[in-house]
Image 1: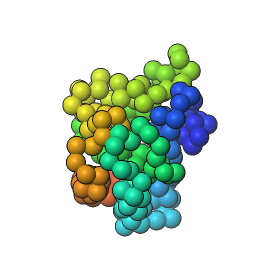
Image 2 (image 1 turned 180 degrees about the vertical axis):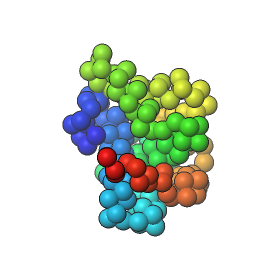
Image 3 (image 1 turned 90 degrees about the horizontal axis):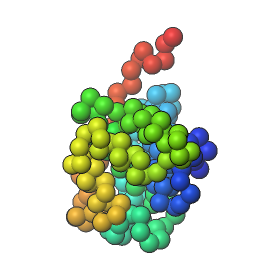
Image 4 (image 1 turned 60 degrees about the horizontal axis):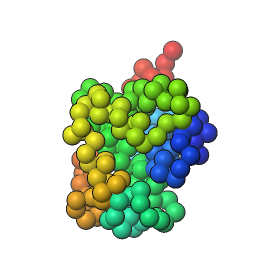
Length: 169
């Protein structure tokens, strides 16, 4: 995902929040699954991303205006972690949604935020993405520190459990 080297994104800065946020999210999850960090270490990583997101996000639409370096990495990771949490509660996952997003994007040769959100919306309805579209284009409906704290609480700052069968062949 990093710098869109694996999956080509549309050529505009608005798509960076997804590719950079995914890079952070999957890197942190890899550290957990490889045993480099434990669940508490993962929670600490997300909490640090939350602190950084609060420092860099002024409360306006995340994708409008200039943001300090790293805002899309940290805030993007939290948005995508929360989306995955939401999807898993509906017996789905970010992994499956991303797969379908990439498949849908093959004809165009690139993906976009809109392609990702359309994929989620088709599977789970418009209400499933309202909080994301608010954060990205309208600005959050509450102050960023409270919003990020609520996201971290909802996540319990923990990812999906590691399944031992994922490592055995």
